[in-house]
Amino acid sequence: MFFHIDAQNGLAVYDQIVRQMKFAVADGAIATGDLVPSVRELARELTINPNTVARSYRQLQDDDVLEAVRGTGLVVASGARKSCRSERKKLIRF
View 1: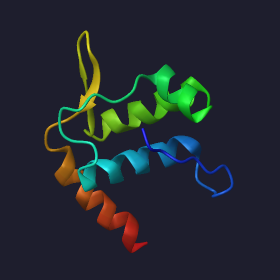
View 2 (view 1 turned 180 degrees about the vertical axis):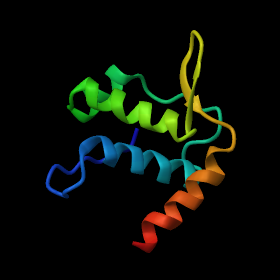
View 3 (view 1 turned 90 degrees about the vertical axis):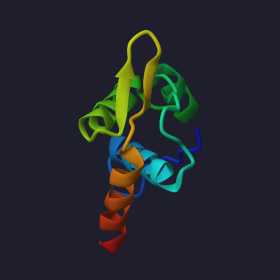
View 4 (view 1 turned 90 degrees about the horizontal axis):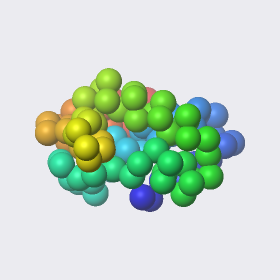
């Protein structure tokens, strides 16, 4: 993936992952149905605690950006791009 975590920016690490994932979905860099990296894989790539990645994935599931596919993992939900675009507009306005 293409996430960049900045420990000095004042946002929690899990929130940085959530926001960057939403921006990527809104831009179309991650398409509907795309499989996202596993918790362990992303934690290893970003050198952060796997619990932090799990927390961000849970938040993304609660926000209907990701959905679990039994036996496969987490994929980008249908309709996520539209909701991520509106969320991105809200974040940019602040």
